[in-house]
Image 1 (cartoon, rainbow, N blue to C red):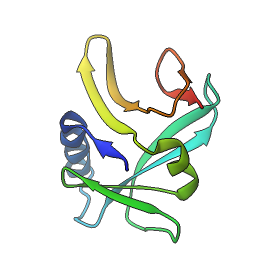
Image 2: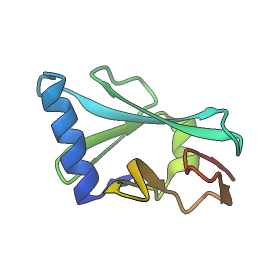
Image 3: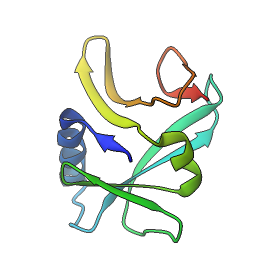
Length: 108
């Protein structure tokens, strides 16, 4: 399962409102090659679910990822920080064996 923190939920809902999205959206989370550590996280709003997508709902937010990405993301929590030490979304991924300094890429 993939979960979302309360702060991340509030930020995602705010961004969806700003973008004028209808009620049928979900947050697509995926893993792509690249970044300092070899794998990077990718997020975007989407409305079309694909055949092998894994769908989760946490705190009223629908989260979707493809099956390949789910192998890297199982047990991950999406968080958001607006503090002085870094602003933005962060992935708390128990599968990552190392992350880069900015936290945007990881390795398993």
